Each structure stands twice: as C-alpha cells, then as structure tokens.
Length: 141
Image (cartoon, rainbow, N blue to C red):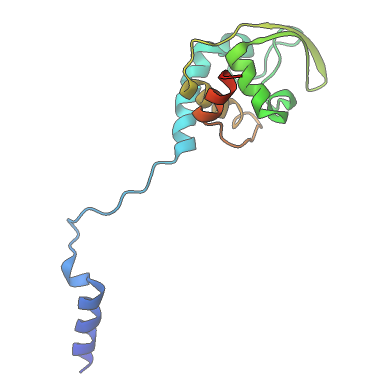
C-alpha cells in the first residue's frame, strides 16, 4: 500500500515524466551586472582619462566620481551631465570645480545608462539602476 501511495505521489507530481536531460527554465541574467560590465568599457574609453581609473578625479581639475555627492544626489542631473556635458562652476564633495566637460552625445541611450550604472555602483557609490528609457526621456528635454 505504501508503494502505491508513493507511485501516486510521483506520478501526480510529474516526477516520472521528467528526465535530467529536459531543459530547465533558465533564470534571467542579472541585468545590472551585465550593465556594469558594459559600462566599465564605456568608462574606460570615454571617462577614465579625466576622472581616473578609480573615479578619483584630479583635484582642482576634474571632479571625483567616487563617493560623488553631485552624481548621487540627482539621477536626472547625472544623466544630463553625460548627455549634454557640464559647463561652469560645480561643487563636488565640498570642492569647487570650473567645468567644461564635453557632451557625450555620441553614446547611445544604452551606453549612457550602462556607464552611469558603472559609475554609480562602484568606488563607494550606490544608486538605483539607470535605464535607457530614462536617458531617452532626458534627451527629449
């Protein structure tokens, strides 16, 4: 009788009809993790020469991106800074910089989102992910 109950349980659960060779449902890849990988490459190509490898910047010349209150305070401003550039005086972590950062308008919405995700989630920074849709919306302004 116990054997019959166990067979009924296995049959009812579908256990006997699945095999290890059947494909399992794949989990979606971690979207932020993939964005960070792509963003690192965008950063190396477009940002690192001024803001340095660890986002430390150059005092008096280029502001730090590491632990940057300027970038983390306003995500729309961060997007705008990459897309349109920054000109004039800004204050980052209590230090004043006269900026003339060129627009990175050659970057796609995805690349802008990726590089901001990389910057805003490294070197002591932590922020919500930026999406290409947010970048697109900012470009329309």
